Structure formats: structure tokens, C-alpha cells
Image (cartoon, rainbow, N blue to C red; front, side, top):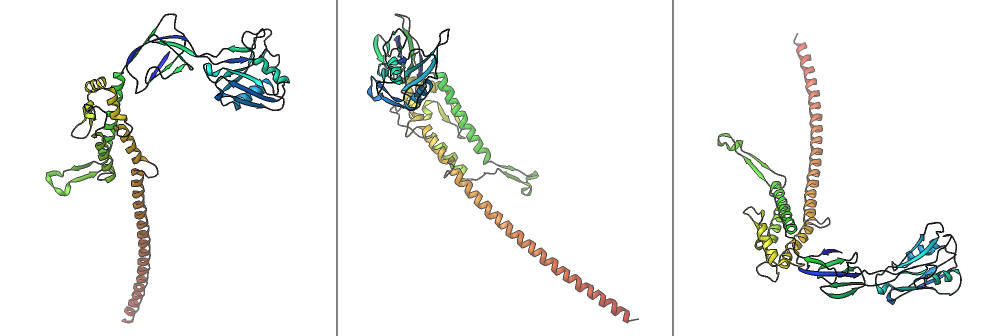
Length: 388
């Protein structure tokens, strides 16, 4: 067997004996020399032990074995799985097989053809026989439930996937145990794995906080000799940005909240080994965390994943409100910045147009002035000539 434990798995020790695996019924036809042989049209009727699974399949034209298998697979919604299997060997032929899509006794089925005559009806009669036929047709695998013992109690299940024996644990049965031999299963908390996940959470949060602090940093470099005129101030792109401050503040607020876990000893992160320093960065105390998990694993889980007030639940909801591509906080802030940028670009365009016009006006005025000066120079020269 293999086991998968969920978050709500109940610790304990269990003894298992697997007496029988669940089986899905399979029916097969007798061997056919040619898979291309055609059969009459008709309607196949699959009747299950559980009538809720009954299904009818309509076959038109003159279907071959492959056509029948294809139509059944297409129209049965997974309730019947059909195949055409080549047996091989010297006298190997082709067999049409139907396998129930439902494990266990409820998946047992019979198959008939509604008209009751014709080649298709004859084929279905082969498939509808019981086991141990001389031509190996009929039932090839009998439907049966899984049978197992848990702590000495014999139980049956229709499927080899069992979810209701050990609370919070899915048991996948894969084979029978040896007679009178039990398998011991222990369900417990994986402290190492849980601690690793918490450390990853703390490290990731601190990385986000470092990024926010870096983007909002303002650095002041004092001038030599205390001269204020030489003091240099360098600010990052988002220094003083209200959105960045809001994101940081809301994240810190969520981490300091309490959660109704039903155990007052474990209602906040600080009580399970996750605390913040004076700068807001998280610190992880692994031994304190594992002690809390050992005392009340459910309460520790609820601190993070309670569906309404869990820290992780609130963080995810808040992050979604930050990053939503339609109306998220970052999207709204980005749109606002882009609007300001477009306004500035338009102002620059208008100013450039005014400067070009002003430059052209000056050029025209200076050109006219140059003409006047040239004319006056010519007059001066003429006046100078008259003095002689």
C-alpha cells in the first residue's frame, strides 16, 4: 500500500492486512480471425449492479470490432472501457473486451444487444456469458470489493483507493499481504519538513521586506568639513511612495494578528516561534515551533490556514488585492504614475513647440535687424564719400 496524509491526518498506529484487492469486471468475446469483419447495427445495453451506471451505446452502419470499441469509449462517459486485443501465437486472433470503469461489486455488468438478433447480437451473447467458457469468452475478470483488516476489524470497500478508514489519510491498496501477516502503519507529524517550510516562509517574507526597504531608501552623504552645500542626497525610485508604505504596513499588521484556534496557548505567530525584531524582520525559533506542533498541531495549522482568519489566508488575500491585474493596488498606482507621465510628456511637447516658435521668431527678427544694419552701413559709406 501507499499512503498520503493530509493536513487533518490524525496521529496513531494502525495494523493492516489486505485480504483481497478490488477488481473491475472484464468481459471478452471469443477469438476472431479478422478485426475488419463487420457486424450489424444496433444498440448495446450495459446493465450494472448499480443501475445508476447503466448506459446504452448506439452503433450505426456496419461496425468492425475497432468501430465498436471506439464508439463505446466515446459514448459511455468512462463507465465502460473497450479494447480490441490481439492474442498472438500461432493461432492468435482478436478479442473485443469490455472493462467496467467502476471498481468493486457495484461495477459488475451484463451486456446485451436490444434487437436480440443479427451478428452484433451474436457477438454480445459471447460477451455476456459467465466465466470458464470453452472458448474463453464471457467473464474474464470477476468484479469484487477490496477486503482488508484494520486493527483486527474486517472491512470491505468498492475501490482500492480508501479515504475513510484513517482520518485524513488516503490509502492506496496495491497488493495482498501474506496470510496472517499485518503491516504496521504509524501516522505522525514530520517535524523536520514542517520546520523547513516555516523557515522558507520566514526567509521569503524577509526577502520581500528587504526589497521594499531597498526601494524606499534615502542616502545622505555629508559634505567635507560639514559644508551643507556639498551634502549629497540620493533617493531610490520609490522613496516616500505611499503605496510601498501601505504594502509594508498591511503585511506587518497581518503578521501581528491573532487567530481563533480554540487553544489560547497558540493564537499568534509569536507563540509558535515566529517573532519580529525591531526592524520588522522575522526570526524563527525551530525548537519552540516543534514544541508547539507536538502539543497541538491543529492549532498551529489554523494559525496559518484557518479559512477566515488564518495568517497565510489573509496574506494571500492581501497579496491578491495588491497584484490584481484589473483593479489591484499596484495596478492603480502604476496607472496613476503613467497618467502623470503622459501629462508631463504633453507639457514637454507644448513647451518644445513654444521654444521652436520663439526661436523662429528671434531668427526672423535678427534677420530683419541684420538687413537694417546692412542698409545703414551702406548709407554711412555713401555719406562718408560725399565729404571728399
